[in-house]
Image (cartoon, rainbow, N blue to C red; front, side, top):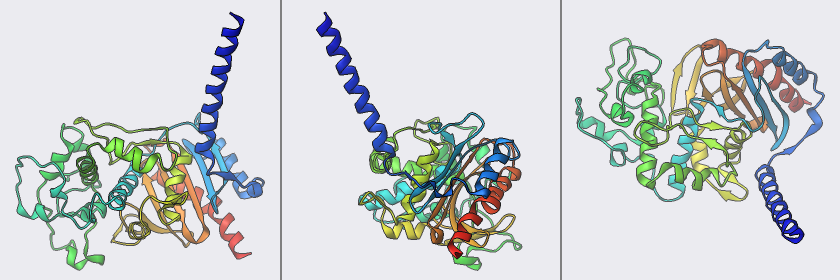
Length: 367
């Protein structure tokens, strides 16, 4: 009996050790640089967030030159927490399109979306829909009447959530009209009229699902496993496929990995997950638009400046941001649950970046 108990304990110890080693392997990429541990600006930011001067911040994680230089969690969050970063998911969907091309499952983003997406009988049939490309969806510039920024738009995402088939919701939208006071695509920068449309990114998910047979399995094999991302959660649409327009739950460190992948020109641990060309295409301008200030847009990446520092970034409601500053070799993850904060939620994470984080590394660069 004693030998049996000893054997069981030995087996359990081996299993626990293996589990711990697996966890450590998942984190091996992120080494720590403590040289900023006592930085006054970062310490002040940390104190203000803890004092709730900035509302509902759940994490701030910063990587510089491939190493963690700041990491903290707030308001009950922790390193293992899955952040609902809302529309940051869209950028990951664009990454999956890049994976398809890298894996020779899709020839290019210039292919017609309707060749791979499920279309049913529509109230608004139009042969012009046949010419919508995957690139049109990646750049938020398809010709269908769809914008989440106008509550009256037929394609507003809130109307999509009321029905079962979100993919067909997109394909059944009418063509967009251009009154005299709105520039037509041919009169716009890059020849595209930007129109923020979550439904179009849902169609990209449908395309990945149809090409691979199972989006969830493919994303795991082609992207998440290669980045050692094992803890995540897809929201599932009423028709049973993962929601690629928003809501993917990821840890803050794993969001950091997505930014690092692009900063590495698509390479990770010596493997080319997406091509260098795809990383460059995704993060260079394809459309231009203006909200509170002028922005440009790549393949589901936002492009702009903070403190006159060029960046490409993922954005989700609540003020969630994953921001890459190529010249500084810097990535910042800011997560928040301030979902009803509107512009205030985005303004406060922008302030954290501009007032407290960026100056530390911009000043270092000038020394």
